[in-house]
Length: 328
Length: 127
Image (cartoon, rainbow over all chains, first blue to last red; front, side, top):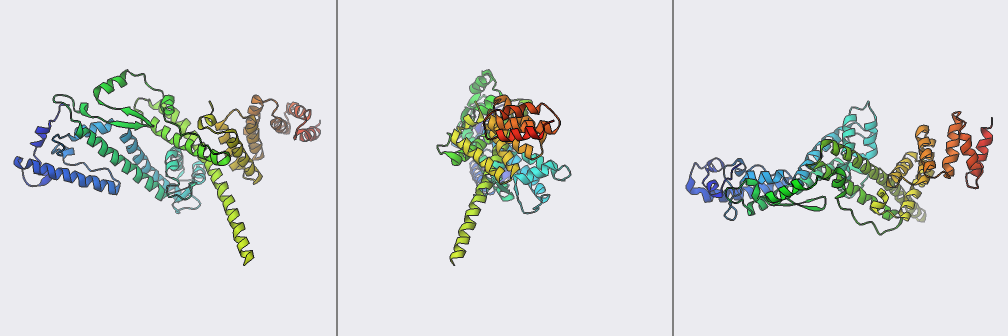
């Protein structure tokens, strides 16, 4: 793809966007409006949690005016397409939206149907009940346990229970993060324009945190190095996700902390494996199955411990309440 | 390296988790106990006592095949896992498999909290 130079973009007809008729002489003003328009769009998208809509420059009509350079939207799109973090977040949003839809269907087919809240046990029950109309959806939910572990407890209440509101909040968080990443990548691309006569993506510069490690995506040289580097296996990709330091607490408190860390790490490992473009589908499936099993185990243990702790807390609260009644 | 080591779960933390699992057994929450024991085995598959405990829970739930597998694994790891010996002996003899007698005799010959049970079962299944 050839470079669309900043100069040629500035002379591009922005009439469609501004609806003021073709006027090359108004280009700088048009760019200013475009730039403002983008800002509004970005602000709106951040507020609504939706991705920024394609601007006129996205349609290749009129680039925003930035520091004398106009990065084309194609460059930004190319950078985003190669940005692991952005793709990760986009996938998470898609999965979250699908999760919410299926979650509602499963919820409608549980004993406590329509309460917009489910325990993992309820989902497992539907997944095990072949006659339940939501059986397939429940199985899908279990296969995407990473949403459960991230979303449950977002409202600070019972992490053993997941509500539709929490799933929505999860989606919103991922969208906000995705939009922020979009802005970062755009800013990087705009701030580092390509040299004339080079490919559009060569000027793209970005650093993305993948599984806690920094992955440089700087230009062609980095791509060449990457191509030369030995391909990582799924195990290595998962292992590259950093571990949280072990809890210094003893007994059950420490065990709980460590299990929560394990569940978090498993989630990040799942995301890292899903988003690694170098892994084959088969490799991914095998590793994901193992990781999801692991994560499921953590969640099951945490749920059991959580419900025990809740029961104990309730017991003490009942005892305390009875004591108060007796005193009165 | 086990998952428990990776997570940095210490001995006293593991014991606390095992204690909770037994609390669930005491509360007759066998499903909950099975989940905790299964999780503990994912964290550390080399713990014979936990395999034996999981076997006992599955046994109580009537999941006899899975229970026997858990006892087998416990005894593979530690042939002196007496709880697994007694329970596997009981399970096998109940279905008419006389190899269970060897397990019971092994446990009956060693001083332990399950020694008496092994002796009682041997008398019960005496031909």
